[in-house]
Length: 349
Image (cartoon, rainbow, N blue to C red; front, side):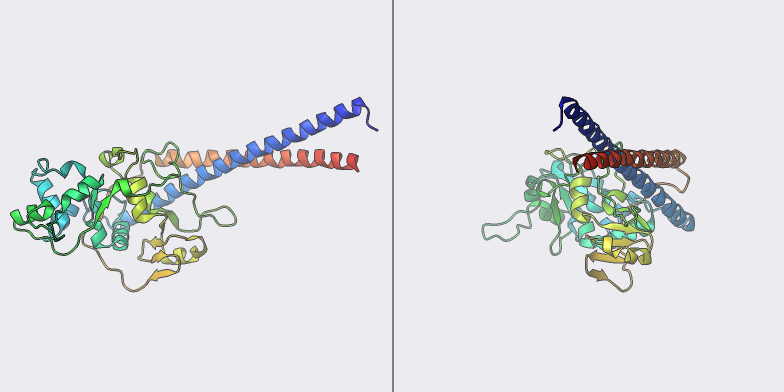
């Protein structure tokens, strides 16, 4: 029979055991946080290396600007997007009822780092979606097209009427995206990221590393300028977590087709490679020659090393050092916990 001193000793040992368990939980959470931060930085650095190679290879090529993208849209004479861009260019859109609700055309709302990336993302979305008009609310969608009592399109109202007045007729259907009706990404943002990238978990091999060649998710690899970055809907959501998450979901980007195919077990919502590989979604491959879409995302950035690049590499080294120290602390804490539990087991037996 245990006396009071024995009870006190057992309570003390149990308390020490719980303390070791709490320490382990904390250390493991810190280790996971560091691992995620390292992956984020390595992905960013990997994207820079890939883009730098592409930019250096294309130094003599034209730099595709937003103005060139708008010019390509204007050449689609009988499209709703071309009519909207014409009105905007002529500064005649401010007087229109639906103007305040239109955010823009998809192709003009983001930029990318390289021509290869622009080509593959544009091909993935297709011309119809690249020319889609984006509205904040359904009020704007409703104002774009009017109907007669029989449900037929009234060619004298909405965007059709404006097109007719300037000698342009909208042929066929056109896509309009209503931001307030999209289900936004709700997983939060990458901490301290100026581009407000979405906190999507990186695909990981059994060893904890990203698959070789993985650059990032398409929704995070695009660049938003200050105007589009600061845009928010009435419910407080930005373009990345509404429009572009709706368009790309968790589409992954890889350097090469071979690396993309090797990562198949870790791809759920499709993937693209800079050399033209395309997986629409799990189990659906797009084969054959790539098809250039003349309306593409404009480019941004330069081939020079960005000011933050060396700093980012230094941060990665420091985080890896912290991670190795944490691993040693976890190992030591686990040994102490196993020792305490072993002592308690022997006493109970």
